[in-house]
Length: 133
Image (tube, rainbow, N blue to C red; front, side, top):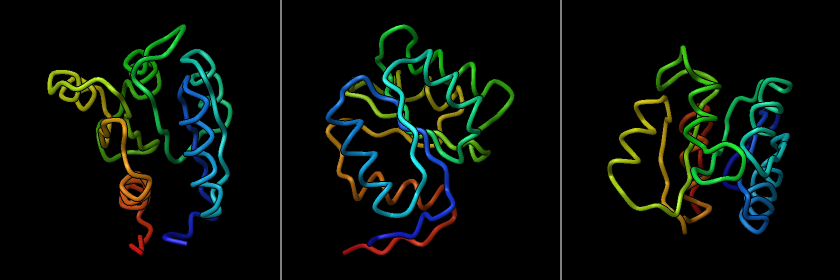
């Protein structure tokens, strides 16, 4: 196990069920309590209910984009403050990354991404040691 995330709450938001299930299983294997949402409206509802330590947030989703979710959940926050947000997207463009970071995203990963890279980012943000295989 690359990290011990026992006691950490993570919200994973993506409309691609394969990505959602793979990321959920990865975090659960490290001991995290994981909640999933497959659209932006559910993401906001669940985030307000569970107050996660970390949100892994897809940019392009039905009902509400990752940008709008980020604006809603982190309007008074800046980078480096809980809930930490890792934005994930298949959209390649520096303009989108800069905007996501401006809105408070703590990290930005392009799909496809390695699960080790995602876990490394999550551990860094949560202050947990990451052990690379």
